[in-house]
Image (tube, rainbow, N blue to C red; front, side, top):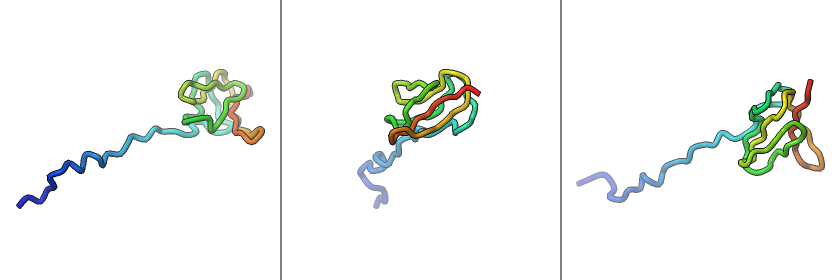
Amino acid sequence: MAHTKAKGSARINKDSISKRLGVKRNDSQPVVPGMIIVRQKGTRYHNGPGVSRGKDFTLFAVKTGVVHFYNRLGKKFVSVRTP
């Protein structure tokens, strides 16, 4: 008598690959143009001066400087300040 199930139930138990989202550069860390600051889905963080947003909502630096996180009107913003 076989001890394995006839149905292929193991096929549905696969887990998806994690997307490695989150903050990649913290407050007061130096960045250069093109360096990713935040990987996100949707606009959890908004881009401020010195930061641009990609089509997948990734925030990246457009100038050399230091990362700065701040709140304005109930929203979280990320900017790059020149030292």
